Image (cartoon, rainbow, N blue to C red; front, side, top):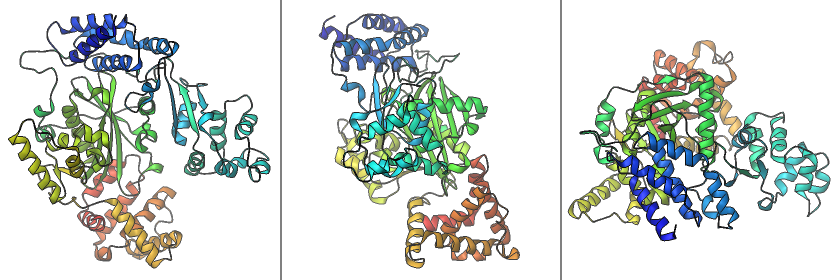
Length: 577
């Protein structure tokens, strides 16, 4: 097959992703078989084939398309290896957009928790190594290493040419250095967070070979019984476009049924999201540290499953509640979710992977919001500027601001709302007009909001928990000589005196360490609420319940209790605005 012929057939296949006629499945299968037999001369053409295969596996026209795409994907590593043997340039496989294809290698500096999970993953055991040519430790290993490398300081403290690799390999013996290093940090007599801090200070680059692993992006899908096929049926459209989605109508529907999974099932979901994020060079707090006991699933139709989970009690944020998630389409991971809430307000991140951005993103986003609003009790949804394009060129290129705007979101800043309205007038007057990138960057400078009917419009426009944190730190500098320990103790005692006046302010003595830690953080935040003393006894007791609920197994209890405490809500809004 000539290069021109190959390019033409790849273009035909890419077009077929959005064609759903009666005979389309047969046409797609014929194209797939031709391309499967073709010789690919370079990385870009093979990557195009790979991405089309994944899209068709998630959005198939019929059973034959599923069978053929799975067969080709399961042996795709051979095509990659053939390119490597032909001395093709393999750098294109390691870009942020398309990384994780079977048959390739990956390299990254991972957090302690992800590195630990990867090294001990049965599917990747003995496939992870240190990328020595990109690693030259210095003072950081010389300072930390003596904890588990005897006599290292005699070399590291005074010599300029310490052979770090020789030291590490000598200490590791027959064990691979990454596995040995992780195990040494795990055995340090320190809390888990401090173990992680020390390991991450070393900035160790790890390399792993995907080969034909199911961890690869190529083969990461979950077998399902009932595949949803995209075909033309009477009045039904095969793909729901964003313009067909009414967010108001979707959120007004009956909430999806969320089913809690067993811990074993939850652990399988947590393994999947770590695999999904690892091969895409992504890592989120909630995808790395999710609580497998909290995983819930919703089946929302059209082959879409949404999984949501919380953080374990000892890893939660000080004030906000956290939910992370993953969406599968016909068993294929197509996006990840992050939602952080306080009272009725929720800040949400929704990232559809590059491969699937032509596939019902608006409708799926609406289903994700249905699940989140139901689970978290949210009535005000906020999207942070990065999602819109602030310091995010990819979001600018995709026109992310208009994705949210056309679903009904409004800018929280008056000048940005006026700019959006001017742009809408230009679009209405000229169908060929496209908002310039410089204007999209201006529009992405602030949050956008969507309020469910009945909520207080504009209440959260100027709010940020960052404002509360900065306020606390300014108070520390001004009144406590920049001493965090002194301020924590003073604030804790002050809040105890207010909430437990009859017990002499010592009613937290019997609390768990986790409950005491949450109490201390609330004490720091609420120290600037002078009217707290004037709260009724019932309001103070409710505040105590909220604080203690933060450490319960289900963090949503904390959020729902908070939504009923009007005075606390007003205080937090004032502090953060």
